[in-house]
Image (cartoon, rainbow, N blue to C red):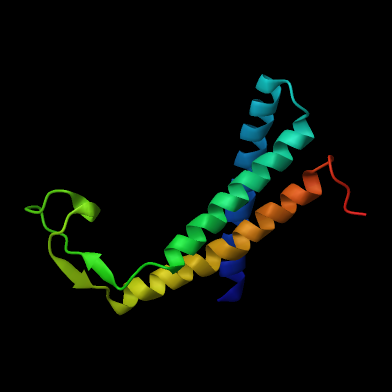
Length: 120
């Protein structure tokens, strides 16, 4: 059970890291900045967004919008509401539990890539 979960989290981390390196490197080239510094800033930004997402996934309230086609406005409407199911609560907590360490690891990767500031 732990090995497949670890494999999925590593794939997720490698995929997000590769995308961050490519996009940050391209932005760095376009702006004429240092590639390593651009990658470090990219990791900082992506890590912060992932932590931001973890916070909001973990803090979803117990009330959800009732899904019906006759209530326009979606989430911001004052239509019918329902209580979240146990599975929805568990999904919110589990998503937050995955995103939180992922965000911290991405920020740590930014610290490692950053040549502007030295760790020692």
